[in-house]
Amino acid sequence: MERSGLLQIAGKDVTVIGPDIEVGQKAPEFRLHAQDWSFVDVLDSTKGKVRIVAAVPSLGTSTCDMETKRFNQEAALLDPNIVIITVSTDLPYTLKNWCAAAGVDKVQLLSDHYDNNFGEKYGTLVKERRIERRAVFVVDKNDKVVYADYMPALGEQPNYEEVLAAAKGALAS
Image (cartoon, rainbow, N blue to C red; front, top):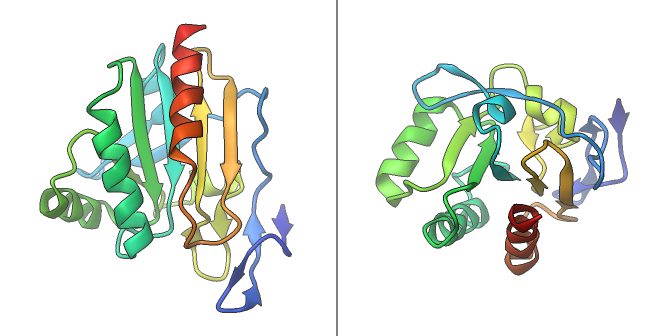
C-alpha cells in the first residue's frame, strides 16, 4: 500500500508505504537486525512486557539523537517490564557505534535496513528516501496497540508524557 499527502520532505510530498497502525488493533510482529546483525522477532522476544516502539529516520539527525537520548533517560526510571525499542534504517554497526558514543544503554536500537519489515507493516517507510517516518507506538503485554502517534513532520518529537503515561497505564491493566 502506497500513500501520499501524509508527509513532506524538503517541501515535496513523499510516498509512505504501509497502513497506519491504530489503537485497539493487534500489533503486527516484525523482524529486525540487532546491532550484531542477528535477526530479532521483536514482539516475540519481548513477550509479556509493555513495549514503546519509536520509529526514527536516522540517528545521524539532531532530532533522532535527542529523542533516543530522552527515551534512554526515561527508560532508566521505568519499571523493568516496560521496554523501549528504537527502529531506524541505519545499519546495525552504525547503531552500535552511535550507542557507544552517546552512552545509550537502556533503549534497544534495531535496524529495519535489510527488508523494511517494520516500515511496511507499521506505515512508516518513506519510499523516496528509504527511511522511517517518525512515529511512536505502545504495545501492551498481549500485543495490543494502546497508543499510536505519527509525527506530522520528521523534525517533530513525540509527546513523551503521553507515551510514558500510555505505557504505565498498559502495565497497570
